Image (cartoon, rainbow, N blue to C red; front, side, top):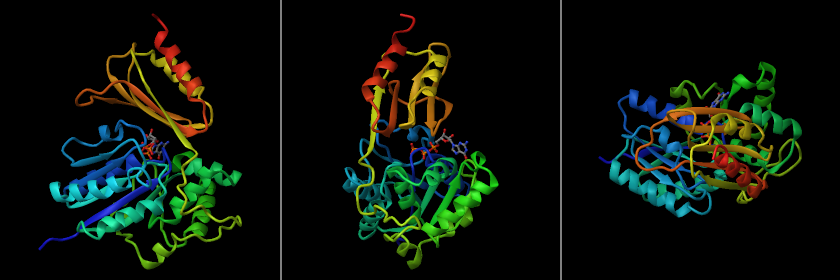
Length: 323
Ligand SMILES: Nc1nc2c(ncn2[C@@H]2O[C@H](COP(=O)(O)OP(=O)(O)OP(=O)(O)O)[C@@H](O)[C@H]2O)c(=O)[nH]1
């Protein structure tokens, strides 16, 4: 008998911890002897998150656009193909952080009609520190998008709890309960959680209902139905030569607030290995990587209305130092 393949959707704002969770989920299923399949959607045209998933895990990539608009049909096709070709026991789809979860759910549900899959849940990851700052300032489209992502969730992972106090975490949980009364909230550091519980929170009619627009306590209507991320822009830079690591760190530290997410693959002139760098809400991380195949040094910067010309100039300056 051909059973339906369970599918989990991962949403959450840029840099909240989706890839971190995806890696943990893959490891969890592998420990149980299951074969997971992965679909990764990135705004840029290089799949950096894919570098963090083991080579033997069947992976499909949707690059250069966001699931909820430009690559919507591709998602249905990729998902159907992954299920048919690799016969995974379970699939997880990581959306870009700018995705509108309603559209994501829509297109996955469409696929479910013909591809033998069963949408089990939508897990939304939230960066506690970032959400707290936006919640206290009560405004902005990023805040509205985060609220939408939480409203649609069947479970909310309140991640980076190490960056807020107990009281602040409580304040966030109360806000989340107002936006979505049905989804359990799981506090995590680096998305470490009881995955039995997390994955057990399948959709119920109530939790789907919670995804429909309703008035928020702030008296505003959410922007569900719109393409929620028109304001998000990105700039991709390809490096012509290795750059100095300290100067690169200094450049990242001086980024304007409008740039809230950056990641890339770099060779430094003063170190031996190549690095994947991650910058999310003012924190910078480096991970040593050995990419398979030919991948050039590049960095993608994501934010709202920032000047890519200024940024390009600064990055090019880095490349000329020492010439
Ligand atoms: N301090 C702290 N950092 C974390 C935690 N979880 C993840 N990070 C870091 O946050 C950064 C972003 O994590 P990712 O898992 O790549 O986030 P993402 O949501 O996949 O990002 P996008 O692909 O841009 O949407 C990385 O540098 C992580 O190491 C946490 O609990 N605490």
